Image (cartoon, rainbow, N blue to C red; front, side, top):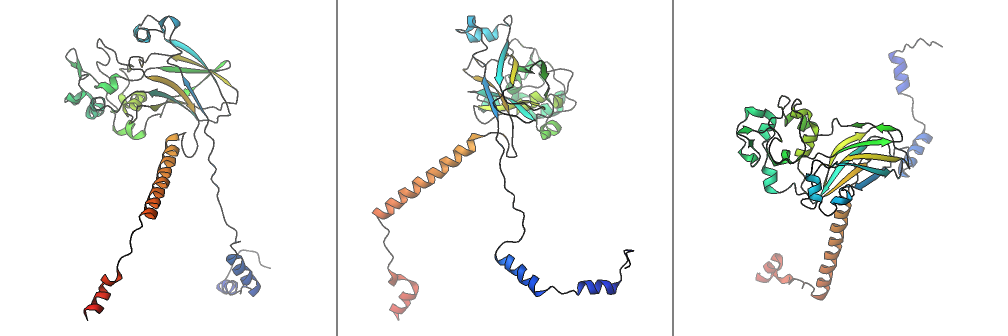
Length: 324
C-alpha cells in the first residue's frame, strides 16, 4: 500500500461514491426521530456570591462623643482610626471586590447633580464658564478645578486589610469605567485651588496627578439614582479561606453624621451574572404577584357581570341578506 499521502481525482471519486448502508441510514433516522443524537447541552449553574457587610459609622465613634457625633467628625484633633474584625463565612475566590456603601445620601438631588462642569473636567482651566458649579465654582477669586458640589463632597474614608501577619494588597487601579477615564476626564487636567476654602467637604486630590488618573474621583462623580448606593473602592487579588479573620483599619473621615447617613464596608465576590443584587428578584416577584392579583380581579368582574354577546344580525353579511 502506498502511504505517501498522495491522491488522485479517481481516488476522490471512489471515496465520494461509497454508499451509506441502508442499516446505517435507518439507524440515523431512528435516532433523529427519537431525539437521541449526540448534542451539547450546557447547564448554567450560577455561582454563589459571598458577601460581607459591616456597618462601622456608629461603632467607630469614641464613647465620649456618642452623644455628639457631629462634633467628633469635625474635630481634627480627635483620631479617626478604627479597627474592625471581619470573619470570612465561606471560601472567597479572587478577585474579591471592595465597596463602600452609603445610606440616606441623596446624590440624585437636583441642585447636587447639576453642580459640576463636564467641560472643565475634560479641558481644565481652558474652560471658563463654570456657573453651573455654584456654590463651589471659585475661591478667593480663583477658579476651582474640579468645581461643583459633587467633587467637593468626595468620599475620603480609607481602609487597609490584614490577614494573620501579612497585609492584603488592594488593587485600586481600573476601578472606574474605561470610557470615563479616556473620554470624560482630562489627561492633562490637574486639580487647582481644590478644598482650599474654610469649609472642607470631603477628600482632597493630589495636585500633581491628572484627573484621568484619580479614579476615586471618577467613581464618585458618577452619581447614584437611589439614596442607598455602593461604589467601588478596590480589589483583593488573592483568595480568602473560610473562617479567615480580616483585620480592617478604617480611617473614619467622612461626615455622614450631620444628615443621619450610614456607612458600610462591603467585601463581595461576583459570578458571571455580576454581584449580588436583590432588587431584580424583588421587582420580578412584585410585578408577577401584581399581574396574578389583577387577573383574578378581572376574572371575578367577568363572572359577576359577564359581557353580553353581540347581536349577529348586525354583521355586515347578515345586513345584506336582510336588505335584499
